Amino acid sequence: MTQSDIEIKVYSGPLAMQTDLAEWLELRPAVNNLLLGLLYRMARREADGGEVKALLVGVFQGDEPKLAFLWMPPRFEMVMVAAEQGWEPALEAAVKYFSENKDGISGLVGPERQTTMFARGFVDDSKIVFKQYIWQLDRLVEPRPSKGEMRLAMPPDADLLAGWVVTFFQEAMGKEISQGDAIQLVRGKILDRALYLWDDEGVQCMAGLERATRHGITVVLVYTPAAARGHGYASNLVAQMSAQALRNGRKFLCLHTDADFPTSNKVYRDLGYYQVGEGLILNFE
Image (cartoon, helix red, strand yellow):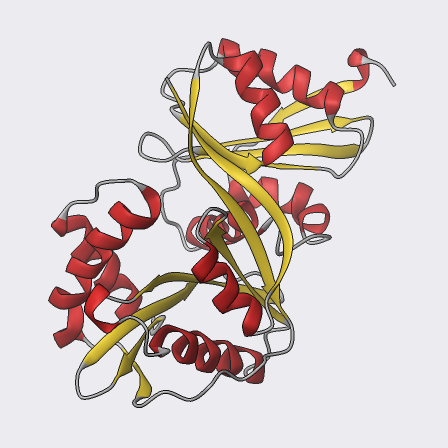
């Protein structure tokens, strides 16, 4: 196939993109979870009559999807997923398309090789925010028990957890988030019953779930304050949360970690998570 076989589709909304690409994305649901989970969430909002603002693009070679992009301006990096093979001509066409429609695109999240090649053709300079590993869990390995127990986060916990979210974004993502945005995020997760705590004579750590897909869900916001680290709280919280999700019918869980932070990678590996992908988060200079 040649460059002339490439077709770029710009979708009118998430339901249209879901109809076209969900089956392809579900072939590797853990690797593609960031885009796939966001797409499903946005499609539900659109189906309920809510407003959705996003740029949604699929790149095809013949009838085969090769790339997909999702961007929610102006606050977030654009997300890209790629086929395992034969994506090179599609990537060249995508760089050309986005170079002509680039206003406001400040970064990219995606598989390492494709993200690096996209950035080289798209901007003069880019900065790695961090390298990430993508992990999947199908069968849990129980950790050494810790004192305390898991419980759902409740409204009275919101102020404490919002402060933790601010610190989490600084430490894990190198990003600033306002206290107001953090409160909004925490309250939303509490309302969705998607934020869990480990309580040992007081709250010791938190972890959440989000981006549900057909068969999986993602672990997010795993954070233990410095004073509570080293007691196995996070291991036990993620383990119990993961086990509960599997019992409730999820076939797998996934999560993203900083590739340069061996402690957390070992924690998840010891729980039975195994690496299924890796990627980059880039900021465009």
